[in-house]
Length: 331
Image (cartoon, rainbow, N blue to C red):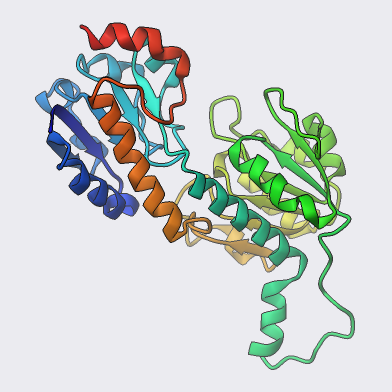
């Protein structure tokens, strides 16, 4: 068992997951502390100052000031891919690793769920169910539209975006992608964001949330979207202007929207999105499979234990930190 202190910070929706990780870590690390509220962290307190690793949900605001107050801190670990609350630039300067859960099972699950939502929108799954459940007369003309022959625009082309493209390969679609860094894929053509928005039949979001991407799809550039387009967001709610998305879905510019993420979660009961008949809304869980959960727990444990053993984590966001990290570990 390794000596050291792992500090866990969970939020109400993730307590069970963090509890499972906590119990497993107790077999590997001499001290594990679990807090369930942000306000329990006292930057001047012993718990924070003695922490070697912080295992926290990705939305936790881990600032430069907070990290600077933790002289023993070696790593900040999120069990999920999202790390939007962590100041990664400050962590890198301070020699602190930012690790996340880039489990293959999670990538596949999210990609499969994204394609499912595309098909549910095209084939009017909910409306077709209503025909039977409400004993309605079958409509005189088909409601469904084929995926084959559509242009799919991928905003972001990281692990999940690339896997969505692989899954769509056999469907006979044209694929374009906007990515903030260069990429090469024989089946996907790189385009700028205005081109993607103005020419795609389906817009699918696969980009992380940061100050640079917040409201990347704002009211102004959403005006470029063609009437009848489908929007799927399984990435982060804050990358779109939710009010503008609502207006475009209400007015028909978006024929359908499928959202699993929102600017404020959980989605308010008063949100106008709930009133849209052409919206599929799920509570940030559409890609959470049993297989992905098990893999994320195992990877979080591996990331933490490797750091405690003096090794870099399996998955981390700031590989350029390594030199500073090795210096910090010797302090």
